[in-house]
Length: 322
Ligand code: BTN
Image (cartoon, rainbow, N blue to C red; front, side, top):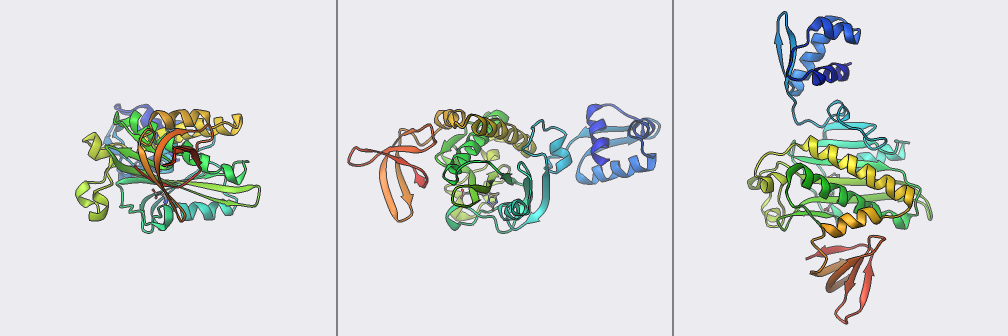
């Protein structure tokens, strides 16, 4: 019911709606209305209450809970269920547990803070409270396990589009899983999977974006290579606006991939905003290190490099440093 109260206040944003009208419209007592308003205020919604006039929504906080997101979300599957937590070890770890216990495709786990956020190659992902987007998407695609890496490209395209659209900043994509602002990393994507030999049980796409972190608060070793959206945009940015845009764009590109069995739409975006292509790169792949030039992305989202012998090679995954 809190969701319905909020929805009605949002529809009437900036003007008063009386307690009586709210209780009549929603079929609950005025005391119940008052309780929900009280809870919304505690969540950070600025609501003016004036006797005989009622309630007026003045400002919405930048919170990422199910009510706040779903009222503005028009997706079909992505975000149909949103699990929002204040603190968790890792949203990817929790998403895996939910996925394994029949969690539905499109479910999202999102946290204000991660105490054991995980990055690629066993690295730690620093995830301080309230400053970033730490979220994981549960997917259950009918694809071959070898195709799961393509989903990272879909996520990278969606995040780059979202940051560009919401802030106007020129977000770039460093193949395969980093989003870059002014030559520094602002977002990392960790795609994990559970699969049998030729069938995927689930895929978890973990997205970590430093949105409003202050650079002074970054650990010394990370400062040189990492940034936040706020540092680039020069102002605090709405996490909610970025999450909503990512979910919409991700769904559009993901459904297109599943239905058309082609990654073309995402690859186009990844190429357009690539900071990798045309540059020398060092690729670290298991025990192999290759110094080469990044030349192209294939239709399957693989990186084409020209190695030092001048030969073209396709790389499916790996750690790239530009
Ligand atoms: C990387 O660049 O190494 C990937 C970082 C991925 C971080 C995100 S934050 C949400 C999700 N939960 C995790 O523990 N990791 C991912």
